[in-house]
Length: 319
Image (cartoon, rainbow, N blue to C red; front, side, top):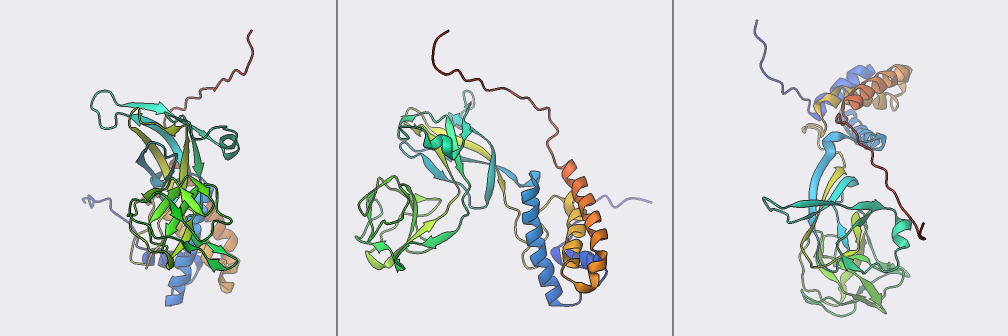
């Protein structure tokens, strides 16, 4: 007897939901059964992201720094950054160099006296924002452009700047409009603006109610010192992204195949907690779920040697 010669087994979500319902002790009988299973699956994958690192969601990406700009958006589905370096001579075949850049906290960044000093960045602050976008309101009245702007204007005048951050992002016209980073505020003017951020396009906008202002909570990095123009600096980073949504039911799940048993067991457990006649099976299903998840998570890890290097700091005074 010959084997199949294939290793492509997978389950689309409808099949996964059927398996979970059967493990819970009942057949999937209706469209609502599929819908509630899909909702539970989305919540469960978010739970997995709170449990720790999912190796299949780690991606390498890069940002090319611009002189004078110290804050850069990262993709909205970013959970956290795992590692990062500053690369010089990106694309070179002989003298490309990766240099250390240290991650710091918000309190540490706040203590830096001059955040506009320009040099090669050596520290990075990761801002793990929600990704939500909200209208800018003052006394429940929408803030809008006070004067029209063209595609190259770097000063943007609003009807009000009350409650705005000292520097940050705005979105012009709609939640899909151009994103702009402003460096500081003077009166009602946003100064030293960097246009067309986060893969948006610079456009002309007319003053008045046709251009409301939105505040996007964009995940971002802020580096110090602010990049200079001595050379081109590329921020190369490895990020952990969100697990993709379940979808309509005909797609396969965004996960390593080794997590399929954990997904089926976990979904069965979550379904049982919502179905009165299945509640006697909850303890058994929870045990199976924990076992399967621990097996998969134990295998989904780095297997290289770990090297710890202490950081030494010497403050003030001679010997």
